Image (tube, rainbow, N blue to C red; front, top):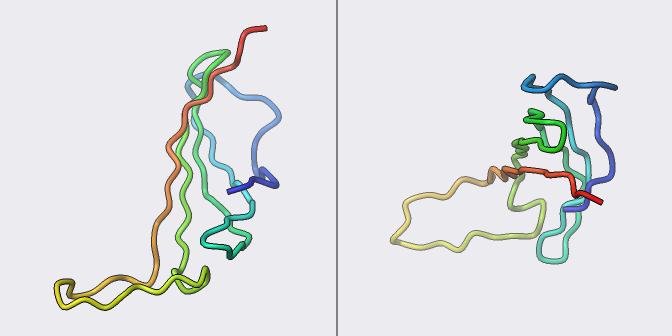
Length: 93
């Protein structure tokens, strides 16, 4: 995933307050690249750390992925939920 744009972030934040925004970017899977939009939530924990979660649901077929049939598996959904659980810490100079 290569992020291209952040949408909906405020100009300033308050520690411990949660913010919702979107991360738009290019997702590449098995040679197929598509633009996707992750819905994200982020919480600044301190002046130097934030925690967040971003998610998007994609269709296997959009990326050329086929789910093989198996008698051992009764069904597989056509879509998949991708989640990124992250912590960002500022580096000290």
